[in-house]
Image (cartoon, rainbow, N blue to C red):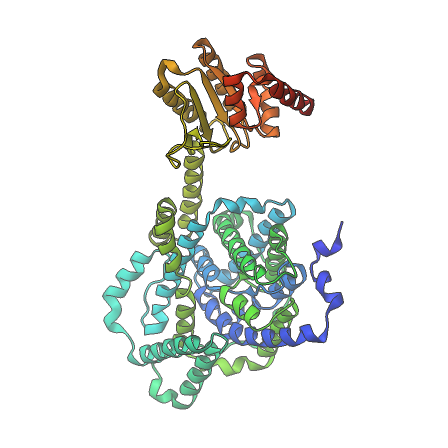
Length: 575
């Protein structure tokens, strides 16, 4: 076993030097400056006291720096996971209560355990059933839900919190006139400042700027804004070790939301990691190692009071742009959080909650992917409607049902596409040995007595009837003149028992009509499946050809010398 593959920190730590540290130091400090106010804000989304957002930025980051295959992905509290936590845990306990906190921490242990098991058994491929359009629709909807939920803090009105947007909008509609003027002004100014600085340079810590301004305003002019809600006391000190309390009934109730967090967290990490990977050539993302790293981050983090965490889009981008080269940048961010927890939490006493809402709203609304929607509308209508259906399902039914709808729709589209693949007749390109799609190349030559066709997928139980029906339809168009059928099998990478039985039945059917059936370009593994299934009991090995042109030439000229040589080659390969 290669220990460096199991513990990726050993790949870069032995060769660490001062030149790498310079970039990591700047990146670590920059990310830490952004992480501290974000952590406080995201804990509020999750329905937890602010300090738990900072706890999330400690042990999970350390574990990922040791075991993560990406050296630039930033782990910690994120808006999307925080809202999912709030959605799931709020049905079991009152937000902010001791019971609520303990369930949120237990959820982190449960999520981490599932991620770790999936990684150990190399089951990361399961998440691939969520296609990119589904991910886009889901993340955009969740971003919108998170942003709208923050209007309660932005406007100073106690709107209801929900993961179903229609109920939030209804409540906002009836209560909007009760907005707090001071809270709203501070919040909107904060939003404007963040957007302004982001347009100038994304590296500017706009979140920290509005946090400092908000604290100063409330500290020195608080008497004029005594109706503005502030964070107040944030306890100092580091989290202590403790095993989460749980029982089996509670775990059963948490499993659906845990699996949602597993899938969302892994997808976020992989998509961010892959995008950062493309910008360098020093390391490669290993999906199953990422699951192991996330699992350990959440499991060990839960022992130190962390709720579920994953990678952050914004902080990972800042980390890379600021010059991070290794996981040392994450460890530097951890040091900054530790210093804050030990000495600086009293400074956040006067921090207005509307400022935190402004930070969240700007951050999450950037996740609404209008460009991808426009691209899909032009490039692939089916993918666009898949994205839109997932988006609407998540908005209207809630996050848990939204991800279930996304998975279900992805599977339906996959089955639809594989059960009805592209099938077409081929014609000979003049003065060449090539056969091409007659619908795309008008000049190709089509013989009345020969049908050459291509099937662009595996042949299996879900599409064998589709294959048979279209073959018969093309053969019927040829009529009684048809004497030869050639299946160009270059695009077929697999055939199951149902597919083989269908092929055998069709070959026999056309033999009775006096029509020969040839195969061209059959891949070795597919040919092996055909031979093992007894197809040579119906036709001989001389019915297999390298190319469609050779099959037609053999039929027309009886060029047996060349075919016998190829048949001998196939026979030897099969043996």
